[in-house]
Image (cartoon, rainbow, N blue to C red; front, side):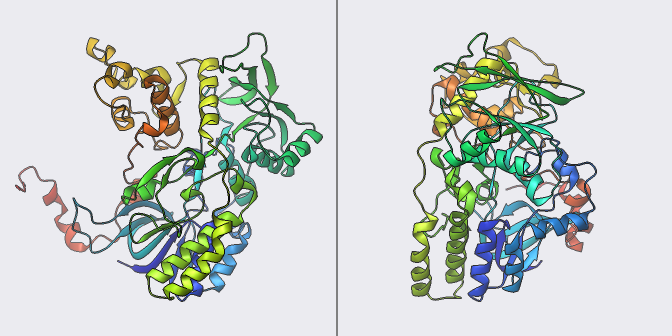
Length: 510
């Protein structure tokens, strides 16, 4: 098994900055990134919410690789600094010894490319895995054309493969406004920007630009439904809402569009950090569950560092890439110091220079915006909307803690085990809801429903969303074909003797 002094996961702004900083300090660095992503994964909306708006067929993999490299100038700088760059390589698992495991000879990651999977050891790890789109459901949201801002950005910039023609953007913060502007630059007609807030929340210059281009701005509005045929969106029905997020009768507006882009917020990708046992805390101003880290982006696990959106996302990061870049440089310096590549005094001095940019003032609580969006969509669309598309679980079934419908199983006991009855006996637990209903167990592995489930649980139980425990993560943290998942680097002894571990006559008694 190969072993690396420093692994960096994610070749975005933060990850490449971390790799370059550590390499220039004399550390041997390996940088892995899952792009270009196979089209089969894009069709599953993994790892980003592409909404079936990627060109089919996509160009060949070599051309995609060229586009990915061309869209990221920092990759060339990283290679010039001596960084080993591995593109098209995803991380599906993270493992280290803990109170219940002592069998590993060091912390390891599970990697996979288009042909195989394998394990790799590391001394230090920097996680710069970015963030994912905050998804919200409404009638028709399962049709092709509903996508996330991150997915849209990737298709427009990294892959040059967005097939949208006319778009409605949900969210008027900098994320939504910047997404709308980028879509226009790529030749997509932006029909409207919609927000539940009473006024636009983003940069005034971006608002003026869009309005000057004829984009309608609907504030105090939500989505009632998306309408289409043959599984494709053709129009969106908007409705005005009052101060209580209730739809106002007679205010419906039909907007022709083939794409609805969700730009309500981004959620840090903390899957790997959860697997490694890093302490996570809910911070609504940073996108939900984020890793506990000190002012040098060191997590509660000594060998693990974080940088960029995974350390916490706020709208200001959309306009200022230097925030993520500075965090990446901090992580690179901290990792290099911990490996003995540079002295502590030098690392601290250089880190102090980066602090003002890396930790700029962040906006106030964004959770109120999430809750307003969610309540407006529930009020306008009802409880029979699928909150978990993969497993076909509705809002009502989540609240009722109902078993999966494909089991075709009913009982009086199941009918009485709703969330309110359960919450009277014990605290609300998202993992228990997941096991009872299968919400979050589909191929997207909760990427599109985790926050919606937590918001439903919070509203129904009267709890603060920060009190709802984070759904646990288990490897693999992304779906992979079985032909890739089997361990190509498995020792011959294990390969020859593996039936022993599954034989019904073989027992290990403790």
